Image (cartoon, rainbow over all chains, first blue to last red; front, top):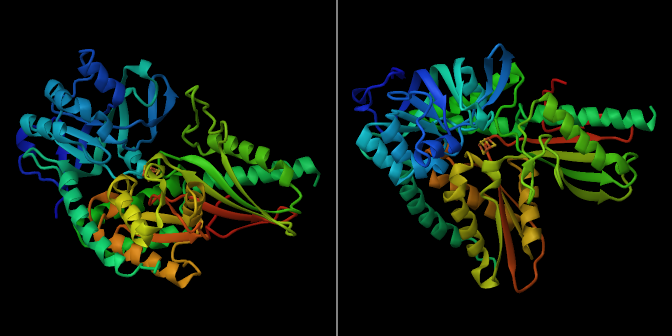
Length: 203
Length: 299
Ligand code: SF4
């Protein structure tokens, strides 16, 4: 199977055929964006200082090494739990026009609607693989809202085949984690009944 | 070697060992992940395992921590009462963590509670955690190191059940944990189950169970059988790597138990993520050391 690579700027048509469970990669610009940045855009109505329209954001707090002369190196960058941004994400997608939201674990109803109505994806990058992620970063091209400190600064990175990214919410209203949960719970009930037959140690 | 020299030598060894465990997983974990990865056929699960493998290789090559969350450092000691440096250990281990934080570098993960600030050194009130077991008559010191990450600490829980709920209740408690918080704790997981009387006993047993090597068994045949039942059962749920579906869910289930009060069954669950950063080092009285969790060591 050919490697599916999306390159920024991404159009709605690029995402049309992508479904939950697909594995994709990203080339182009990716901006780290997490808790406080979302809050500023949605609650305080401040415009995001980086244009992410048709672009991609990453829920992450990286470890950055300053190289002097306003240059920086990415040491490790791992995704952080996306669910924390759930409260803001639907609105965020609508206002910024972002096409790819990358993080860890699933997201909820709101993000699903945001992705469906505005044609965007939520993807997960495998957690615990922070060195792989950092090595996909070719260059940090800008740093905005630095007053937020290292983890929360908007680091805009030039990335090459950043991934694997597993599509967890597609543009058609599907949510992989929610689908899986139903399956897992059904299987669990059966497993529970089976094990109970063998652990009647108290007689 | 003077006392001061000895203390500085042991501090240095422990700092290097802690930093090392942040980038290299123990032998049993590496072998198990390889085994589980080989069983996957779905492209998604395979892609995730391949990334995990590449990550560990890069971490080793570039000498960086393999996961960005290097956890809160915990030490489990089995210390001989005649070990010559027993009095120095708390201070020494604390200094070792400070040094490892700079050298590795480790992420700053110690936040003072109530005052709510990050100490920036990975030490604080009660951090690193020290769990002592005194061994009368011995003069060596065994130390387990563990990096307790946020994601894998989150599912931890303990509860005291009524005997009427029986081991069926224990089973339910463990399974429910797997399909809720376990999903986000970066499977395949190592699951520690503790059984005893009260919550703290059960919780501590469950954590000690995570220190036991993967593939080891509880000495009680019934407990060992329950380990196997839970392992097979949780695997059948098919959480897969990262909770995104796959053939398996866990690297293993380890149970540690003690006798209980007749009116209660205390049960605890602790979870280790795929990045299960456990180390085991033993110092003799002259500070010669052996490391048996990792066969290849580069310091
Ligand atoms: S659960 Fe483990 S592997 Fe996952 S992010 Fe946390 S420390 Fe890393």
